[in-house]
Length: 356
Image (tube, rainbow, N blue to C red; front, side, top):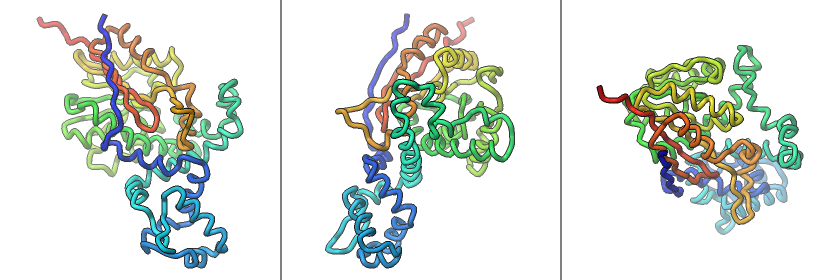
């Protein structure tokens, strides 16, 4: 029996995008920052460099006490600083603005998901099935709309794919930092969504050819997303249902990125088995997933709420490791990676064909 190797990785400068979370650790700070974006205050400060409270109040006609309240919250959150009456963005916030798309997405989904947390947390703890039916945030991710082509399905699917695409844009950096993808000429990403994960791989590895296997409407929207990119010619989309349809085969690497947690244990095992069959001898299967949510020191950042609503779905790696062993895969390796929540990167290899 082959034993798995385990290794922990701590955040490094590779993951400097994690700094966006520092500006949404509490509800009041996150809401004030979202308002500053929504009313155009952040862009105004970027353009002007600094301003005083009176000029800000006159520009937005808020009334002086209201603008003072907003600016006070932004000062407390280190978004702006008051330098002898002149308000300007802090260096720390300007650094975080390099990841503006991620910051604004997290603000949007956190402020949205907070309603479910406040209203239905008891259901999340005691009645998870009922929580799934009540949660507006959870209902965004409706895979049943990914088969039939109509305007409503397209818009609803594109909405949640926008969330997963932006998250993957940054999470992929961890996978690329700790796994060498240059060794795999042909990659199959099962449940690969918009293709953002393989896009990041192809951008980093110029010899890679990638295939995304996903539901029909997801593939159509993914093709729209990839089309403008220079790597588009190296990324193909294959439409189908990974649970019921045959997968293409002969790949050097098969990946599951943030996909298996969507499925119960039985279906997750089936997907891994199908992924292993899609490998050519000597190929590698890779699983990159969120692990169980951890509450450190009894504190939970406000920005963690969207993922907290899915905490029943986030497994440890033991089920996946057990299934890989049962399929006869070898050289199993697990790396634990701490991002804003715990992740793990699990790889295993298919036995090569015996020498003639």
